[in-house]
Image (tube, rainbow, N blue to C red; front, side, top):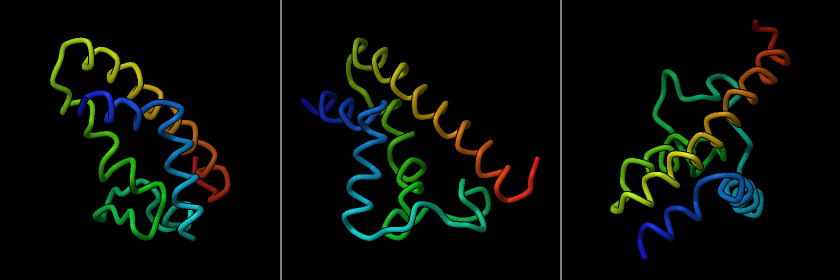
Length: 97
């Protein structure tokens, strides 16, 4: 059951849940100085995107069954692709290349 709950937090649905929950709680999308937590600890009580780094990207390694690990790997790839795309878009806005 724990694997099932964790799988629900990953993938496209997991992304939607992060922003739905964070928006309802009034959290900002990301830290404008360091959106991807490169030089700071993630604070998902303040920034929605930080939840990826504080929790979601760790879930893949916490699965108990082989099947869950395979599914989690695929769903975690969705998260990583999203973060990569977002990094490109934020970089354009912030004047980075």
